[in-house]
Length: 450
Image: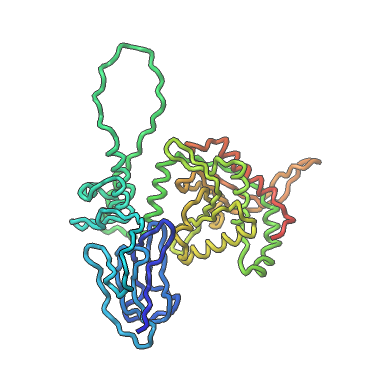
């Protein structure tokens, strides 16, 4: 019997396990090569796993909701015409998976264990409470026992313990006990003390909404990605004091050049020429001029990033949002940026991104003009310190300053907005950087080729 094993693939350098969200094929179903068999989720992105060959599913080694290590066999496919269908194996109750589930090659000697970051805490407690891989890893690093995990209130679905719940617990645990207040000293001239920032305390979860009798409402449970987005956005506002600056840019030259080039580019490259790579090119040039925008904050330390990795927000058909990253964007010319933008955007919309492709961004751009918006005040994508929004391009009458005098003309204008972290980016830096991006856009070379 010719069998092919379907293996849990490596989804990125930092990913060692994934959760099975949904089986798309049952035991006994026929599959074709590259046809999706199941959906999985890491802590970064959801993906579909395709079949490596034509055949029939004869075994499924795990059930939906189980966490599987990278490199583990998750299903068996019979490639012969007459396939003997076996009942799906069930994973052990303790959540561990052994190689006895399917036949495997003999091992001559025990291999030296690989350095895989796995928590000692079980995936679920005696009381049936589920702990995610991320929570277990943090618990292991901080020396938190399962008994202590049980005592921490959870704000996730069904009181699930989230990363933020655990980090808030650690913050409170590390705070020293209050010491008795000293007796009042004789009156002296007060000495100014340095400002001590207060630790943010996570607010209590909002009580569940209960509609009143006869109320005409519909309650929709957030999907997994929307929950992650919600947590990330709230965390960002609690972390960074946001400030937003605006400029208006004359993009007439850029618009004229794109209109001239887009048909030729689409015919030659079989893909569209959008404004996004043109904006990214200007942003990269401005970051070179103002490198302190390309940083992150670690307590009282500023981490200056030498690589310029541009994240671009992409709206998904589900209504959710994802931010794939163009790594080392400063090493790409305009054609390379265009190819990268189109590739990442297309694969994002069909759920084909790898986890590493949405990590490591140092600056983000979001195009609110796609939806007809003039401007926006975007939320910073932590741990970055700035994000730019590009508005819609509109023709309007504008005063044009000429050597021989001012005149009024019809120009293509747009607003650019920059939200930045006021802990490290002041108005002078944020405003100067934003103005420099607009300058590069306005000075676009209309004689260039692509």
